[in-house]
Length: 381
Image 1 (cartoon, helix red, strand yellow):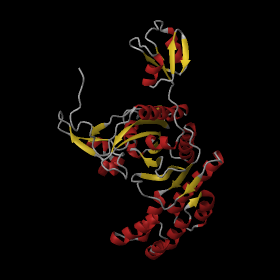
Image 2 (tube, rainbow, N blue to C red):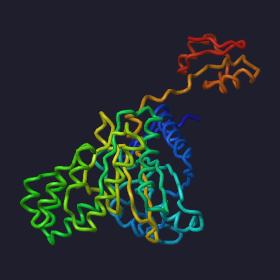
Image 3 (cartoon, helix red, strand yellow):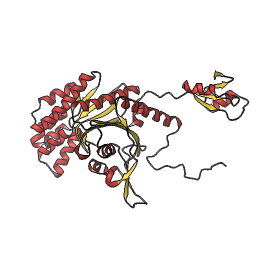
Image 4 (cartoon, one colour):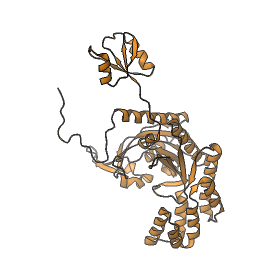
C-alpha cells in the first residue's frame, strides 16, 4: 500500500524543521565527537528527560528560564509540565538529588534537544540542540580554566581553529550598578547604555560610579590590553574580589594554552540570568552567532558549579565538513555476507540490492553509491 500525503501534512510549526539524511548524520557524528572529548576528561554522560513537572524544571535557577518555557498539562496527574528550554538546570537537579552522594567534584556531560518559546532571532531556533559539560562541587580558578580548555579541545577536534573565548563576569558590572543607587527608569537607562557600550551615555548616567563604568567599557577587547585596565581600577573590596577572579582565570588560561584567543568584556551581562562568576562565550571567525556559552553559577543547595553548553547546529556550520561513509552497492547475486561485513568494518556503508538488475552501475548511481561490490570485487564507478 502506498501512503499518500494529505494536504498540509508537510507543514511544520514555525521554528521547527526536518533534518534530512546528510544533515542528521553530520549533526549526530559531530555531537558524538564532542562527547568523546568530554568523556576523555572524565565527564560522565547523563540524559535528563525532555519533559518535567513545571515545579521541578523551573525551581531555583530555573526560574530565569520561565519566559522561554513551553507548558502543557499532564493528562494523568493533571499537573502542569514544562518542556526544557535548557539542560543546565536539569543537570544541577540530578547532581543535587540522584547523585547527591557521589564524590565531588562531579563531572557530568549531556547532549539533547531543547524547546524554546521564542525564535531567538532565527526561524529554525525553537527546537535547538545542546551538548555540554558541568563541573559541580568546587569553586576555583582551576575549575573555571578546565571548562574553557576542554571546550577548546572539542572545537579543535571538529577542525575549528579560528575561535575565541570572550570572558566576562556579570556580577562585576551588576554590583557597580547597584552601588549607583539608581532604581526605576534611571537604572534602566544606565543598563541600556552599558549594553550598547555607549561611553558618553554611561558617563552621563553613571553618577557616583560613572568613572569606573566608563573604564570598564574601555577595557573591552583583547585580554592583553583589558587586564592592565582592570588591575588599575580602584574598586570597592567585594567588587575588587570579583574583578581579580576574572583576571586570574584569564591569566591561567594564557599560561595553560598561549595559543588561545581570549577577549574580555567586563560590562557584558545580557542573558546571564543565574550566573554568579566568570562566564565565557565562544565565537568563531565567519560566524555571526555564538557557538556556545557557559560560566559559574550556584546549583541546587547553593552548590558551586561551572559549565559550558555548545549549540551543535551552529558549531557544525563552523566545523570542517564531516565526511560521510562511502556507499557501496551490493549486487543481489552476492550470497556470501563476509565480503559486505568486511567492507563495513573498513568504513564503507553497504546498500544491499534486493533483486537482480540488468545495469549494476546505473542502479548504484541511482541509490547514490560510489562503488559496486560483485563477485568479491569492489568496483569504483
